[in-house]
Image (tube, rainbow, N blue to C red):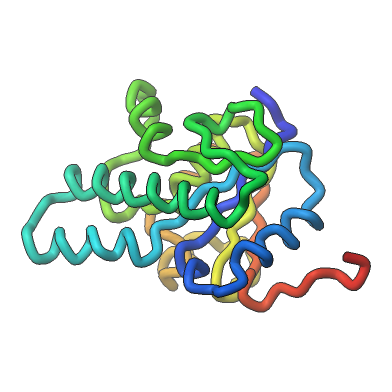
Length: 192
């Protein structure tokens, strides 16, 4: 496992930012990491699956895999905004800037006894923790659309700013440092 990789979850709530590609590029330029793996959030695409599940009672198992397919689409969306990145299927891939195909990653991870449960309590937040755990990453950065202070992750889950499983997922990664950045309000440093 390599500890030089950093996992960065790009929240789906950011996808409507007209300057998302430029904003991400500027943020990544300031982020000092040899290797970065971006984990796409679900956003509106995952909400479509939630609506289908409510209307058609698809069930959590089927909805889990459909939502992961939407994350796969979002990975390619982010790759379109970040031409310097490439879509990868494992957080261990040796790419300076990779965007994780969450469907492919989850399919492979199914073979592991500690894979994530298939429920709506698990979203891309917990998936990012899982990717960090598998990669041996030392840091997970959550790029979101809102502010959050501190590291009381059970409180964050109760407030709905991370998924319900997130605090539990972090228990399997006790050395993982988690940082939170509101990318909507983030400003590049003057030196950039």
